[in-house]
Length: 101
Image 1 (cartoon, one colour):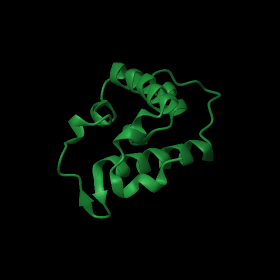
Image 2 (cartoon, one colour):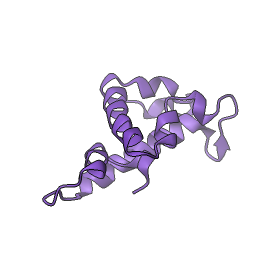
Image 3 (cartoon, rainbow, N blue to C red):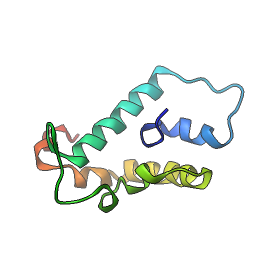
Image 4 (cartoon, helix red, strand yellow):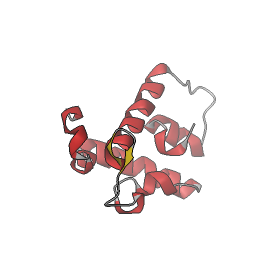
């Protein structure tokens, strides 16, 4: 998968895969949520890329820049933290406010 959008379980498996791990539909649904978060933070509205901040200035910086095994391990930790505290929601653009839980 594409690293920024990978489910947390898949990120954990990325560095040390186990033979009994099964990729399920729930991993795909989780990935879809990450795509939606990406859009809500980096787009002002449909087809309008955010102009006031770059990706490096958002909470998605580490999502986009994860390349090494250490980066991916850190991304796993960061996603868990961001989702448990809902900190990603504070960076949603106003157009997407209604999508917040």
